Image 1 (tube, helix red, strand yellow):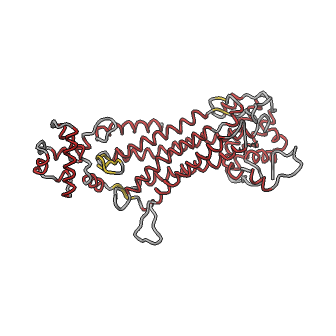
Image 2 (cartoon, helix red, strand yellow):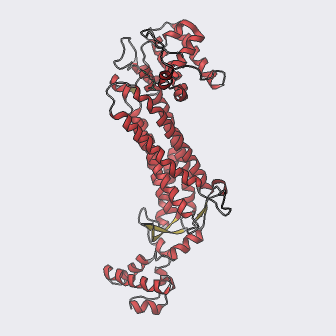
Image 3 (cartoon, rainbow, N blue to C red):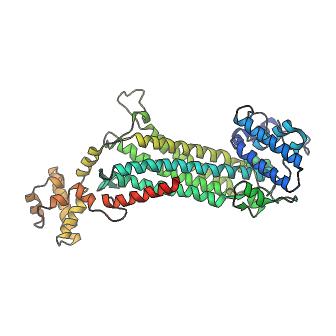
Length: 461
Ligand code: ARG
């Protein structure tokens, strides 16, 4: 076991303790951030005259060599190292000798790991945004195609009023648009550089913290060294944003599962995104949608885990914080996988327009419009509501839709009805008349779609 410490110890670390304590198996994924941080640190040490020009050069070349060799597979990240920081420093010293031992001047693993995680999360939020943008692009494509595709809108999972598929998908566009802005938001608040915080109380060396912050693309250095090494707020924000994205994906998946059911048949999930049953030959199951819905629990778990891990930690760094990695890495891997798979499933899914329209017709989704018709002919809304309620009851008894009633049947319930009632309760009219901003009417939808298009162009620029 290679450790960076041991001077004040008289006995070797117990093997089990070593394994329990070590983090290399999971923080190895931070190697690029760790080396990048070290390169900036060394450059600053050289500029400040804390390291000689020669030492700065040797360390810099050594670090670049390690990075290159990890990337081209010549240097494996294995062995008995406690963590990625110990690994890089030990390999460096093995390679370049004495100068390598000076890399850690004016630094602690506490500010080092805080930096590595921030660098990692910064690029991960960018990757998340690009995956969300791909989903938004797919949604927009479908919205443009389905402004006239009529389907029932639901409340309480009961058919309510007709909407269009474009409108329904547009609701998800808004949700994922907010997710996208949440990921950008996290970056803004976390973008300060902890390097130079030392173990907790800064250092006695004349470090130029503004310089390292700038080299690493931060807005500036963190302003309190104890906070610098022990702030994990941004991870909680990230996990909260990831949980929200999963909640949105999960709701969408739940709808797709319902729409894909034998009873609804509003959509057909592509064979490539479905699975079969080992016993029932007829089955084609929406496993991918179910798994995404299921994995939501696991991401919520990471958020709860992180909040709980942090709640009792006194200032400043404590080893508890090492637990942040597996939770955050797992949540990130999960959400990125789910986003990519969901977009694939959505883009290959077939929408059964006729089934949707048929479902609309047989659920009295035009009852509100029939009441509005009476109101437009001078009947007070409350009375109109009662009249249409009776009409619906009559239809249920006769197994008819409002559109199927004869003029005599209409007149028998209220003499106010005229021939134009048929047009007023047609699904097309019901949708077309709803043209206030945010409503499903094609005119209103077209304007919203234009705004969505502009948003995505801006985001992709
Ligand atoms: N592996 C540690 C972590 O992830 C790095 C920091 C260790 N610092 C220490 N003083 N033990 O948090």
